[in-house]
Image 1 (cartoon, rainbow over the protein chains, first blue to last red):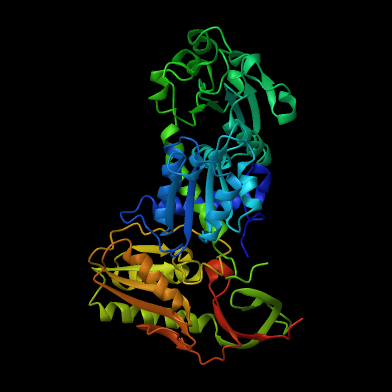
Image 2: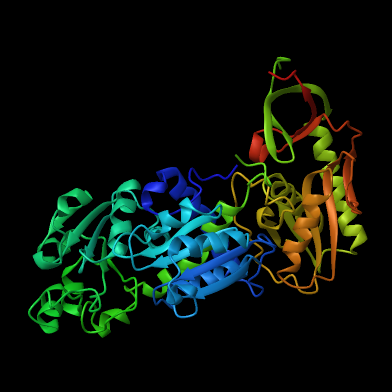
Length: 313
Length: 203
């Protein structure tokens, strides 16, 4: 009897608005644990959590790893270079192998969209998407919601501008539906070359000028310019992008005085966020990282707790 | 007060929901005055056993244990004129049945003082199997090493499954396992009382 409506968290579609509230409320309690001297709970003793990271990642993997450890679960990490995938094993076979080792939850990051669904099909374990290609990154969206709620006190009715490489961003892929589910208003802001072909299907408002919508924003969520994903240069120069879409002190001054700046990391200082803004108290990037551990603990606790031992249908 | 069903509950077998059950009041074992007198007595007993209140702190188990802790702190302040630190603890993450049963709602643990070296009086409304108390003791230990942990409960209904006993008891109430004991506090439920509930017949 898990309190969540889904066995897996693969996309934001798996979660109802009530599920999101449950996760954020539970994460509040875990945040308190992370402030204690002894940051460890016995809650998931004897459970096995595998971090299958087939794409490079440090902060997300570490965040999941720390979350598992603080809940006393046994975490095992598997990265692309060390895994049998380099020997040609298919994802399906990797999944079956891991399933045979009786793991309880698997966190997967993969360069292709839909990898979590493939795993869920051929494993009994719960699957949490740690980022799949250009599709989704739901725990990032959840920790972003948590951070916003901590700072502003609510989510409903807030206008959140998501600025940058919308087209290649799995962060935006999860954050836009997440904001819509909790009653906030997402606005995607990017040069036309970095917008998806049909931005309207995302359900967010679309703007191509940051300065035009800046005064309305409660949150400016700056995405990283992903050089490794962009084919060719989608804008004339980095300098030009920074000038028109970067958050700097001048822009910060013309925004609402309480507007906060967020970034999923790692930051390209001087590109999407100027160094001065990144170090200002209005940038809450480190709070996002801090929230990440608590939110991931909540996800693990809510997915793994409450199953009737073996008798679950 | 009508004798009709007053409470809904769930019978479980190894954590699985079997049936929704309605409970009705079988007997009122403590009314508001009895609760009031018990609280005053327990407050005096705590002070007597600890020779004052200089080193004690109260920690209640949410929700009604926290309420009990607040009320005891109030009494102690009235008697000694000194305010005692009060905290609350949520035991959801320390339960021994996390795998089969999740708490419907998790509350924040809030222990705003250093437990190191203190005499902690743990408070809960009803003492039953002792499993909740074991979980709460583990939770408190994660905050430091108290000098001692004592236990204050409003009702002890028996049926212990662990070697745990209360130091301060409002009332011993012999019950059957099929019954439920419901403690109510004005701060949470609008009234102070302790009732024994029995099944109104499974539906």
